[in-house]
Image (cartoon, rainbow, N blue to C red):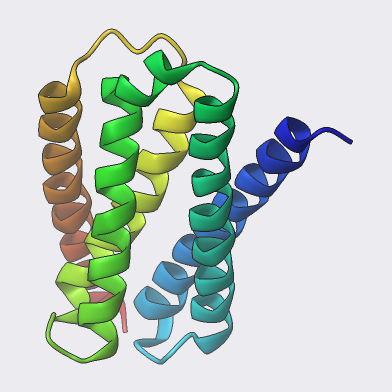
Length: 155
């Protein structure tokens, strides 16, 4: 198995674990408002794999002489969003960010990273991607607010 295939498979696994963990954490939070520790563990494992394989991708691009991809706006948006995921997780862990805000940021960020990884040839620059990302965070936060409100009324 070549390094490129290994890094690609690792990156996909990290993304799947992260997105799945974020999705289940949100479901646990919305349903019970209790700590979904299993989902958070899966999300952390996904983040570790994602960061390591992402670093592997950067090394492969550099060593194979494909530096032009390192300057891609899509790549820089993914790196920024990965940093947001890390900072958000840290702030949630030390209780410096309300769970309602952190939840929307986490869920949106993991899905944004997934979409950016899959959408080849995205015809938008870095600032356009980041603008859509911010709008998506607000939309998800608003949607979560309405879902929570609806669930409280039913309960």
